[in-house]
Every structure is written in C-alpha cells, then in structure tokens.
Image 1 (cartoon, rainbow, N blue to C red):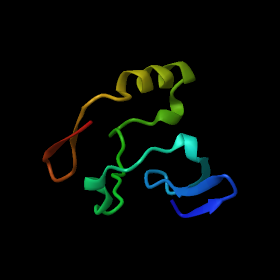
Image 2 (image 1 turned 90 degrees about the vertical axis):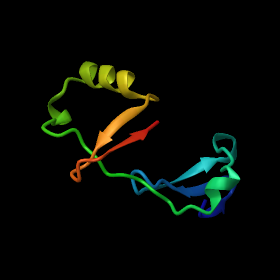
Image 3 (image 1 turned 60 degrees about the vertical axis):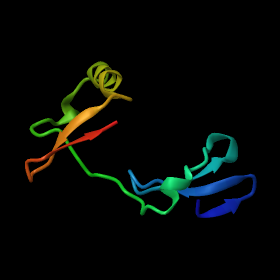
Image 4 (image 1 turned 180 degrees about the vertical axis):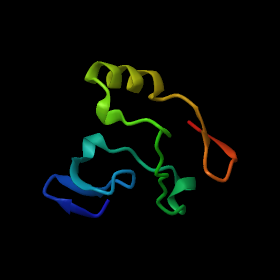
Amino acid sequence: MLAKVGENWKVAFVDYGNTSEVPIADMRPLKEEHASLPAQSINCLLRGCDKSDWPKEELDKFEAATNEIELDVMNNLKYVTKFS
C-alpha cells in the first residue's frame, strides 16, 4: 500500500510493476511472517511459446489449466523449484 486515496488505497503490484487504486474490501491482510520479506516476483516465460499467436479460446484453456496449481519451474541454472 502506497497511500490512501479517498476511500481506496493506492497499491503497487510487484508482478506487473503497475499501481492502481483498490477498495479496502478487495484487500487481504499480509501474514505477519511475510511482512519482513522483501517484495518478490519472478519474470518467466514458456520457452518457444508466443502466446500472441494463440486464439483467445486457447489462452482461456491454458489459463484454466494452470491457474492455482503447483508448477515445477526450471530456470537457466538447471535447478527446479516448486511454486504454488
């Protein structure tokens, strides 16, 4: 949260790098054990995949198949980390 703006709060989104005004009803408390951690995100992509060529129906199917699931991620250093 960056600042209170009327009834909303201006927040920074680490994943996309943008800011937006968000109603307090749409926000959730940060767990205390995470409060001391720095903001983090991982820029990633699907190798060899250009989603700009995908039809909207296929993009929707991909999002539905990968949203809210645990993924195995391999970076260029060749180690695997689990994210969920």
